[in-house]
Amino acid sequence: MNDVGSVAQLRADGTLRHLLTLEGLPRAMLEELLDRAQGFVRAPGERLAASELLSGVTVANLFTEPSTRTRVSFELAAKRLGAEVVNLEVQLSSRAKGESMLDTVYTLEALHSDVLVIREAEVGVLPLVAGHVAPHVSVLSAGEAHIAHPTQGLLDALTVRQRKERFDNLSIAIVGDIRHSRVARSAFHAFRAFGVPDLRIVAPPAFMPEAHEFAGATRFGTLKTGLKDVDVVMMLRIQKERMTHASLPDGDRYFAKFGLTPERLALAKPDAIVMHPQPMNRGIEIASDVADGAQSAIRDQVRNGVAVRMAVLAAVVPPLGARA
Ligand code: NCD
Image 1 (cartoon, protein in one colour):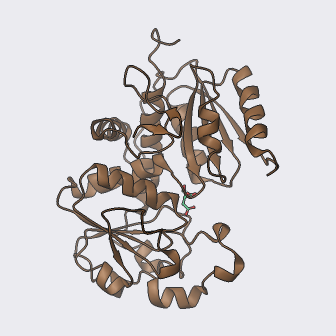
Image 2 (tube, rainbow, N blue to C red):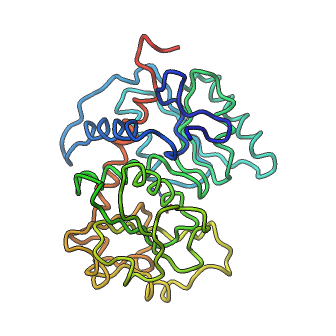
Image 3 (tube, rainbow, N blue to C red):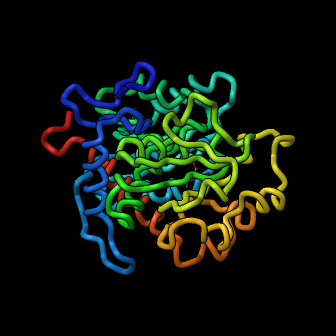
């Protein structure tokens, strides 16, 4: 399935136009995006080669939910490819949200935006926008409700590939608030597409997704069983904003059962890596000595975020000369 609702993510010629979900995208396309992203990865302190791939292109970041990392990395990615960038943080009234989002989008189009990067808390607004933009405009999700965060899924896959080289022999545990997590869903789509043979989800009952979701993943109710001999431990943030106050777990009690401590990490393979999309709740889902420890790949994830977003921007914008 390459469609989101009635919106096709691919153009008639098979190239990527919108990126709203990784679900259903061909593995070869995901691989190409990772290869391209890898080419943009730079060591700390290393100068970036200036690129004009996106010169003359305007990228608009439209965020209706708070974000620092994702917004900044989309902005840097666009600028490093020579694009112009506009940033909009908007509060839309929840009444007629779709319509007011479309008004904002038409304004951005009139200002010659070619790529719209959108983060939105309500399900369905992103596909609605993608279904209404002009033919030369691309829509990229920077996170849709609990549904999808495709560039995060790609950067997570890139981080795993850099550290583990291949996917077809891996055990990966996704741990924590899976139910409310777009990060978990997009990572799952990526890992499944790359053929990870042992995918595990580890969570207390309240944080488990619906039974029909995460098909093919094995479910675990404790870290003791779920982390046994895994290669990758992917921790998630508790998504307080997607829960009612009553359903919020007490931080200390949660940490006692589901917090990643050095002792629990020792259940995984000795060379297992630890990931977290950030922002981290230290002392709730992860201990500081694990977050900052030798097995942590969390800073790699941030660095890879810029490279992946450069790759996605370069993929959706047709090369000069071919532009509509
Ligand atoms: C994530 C998000 O907002 O979806 N963070 C991010 O993109 N860097 C994860 C989270 O908020 O838990």
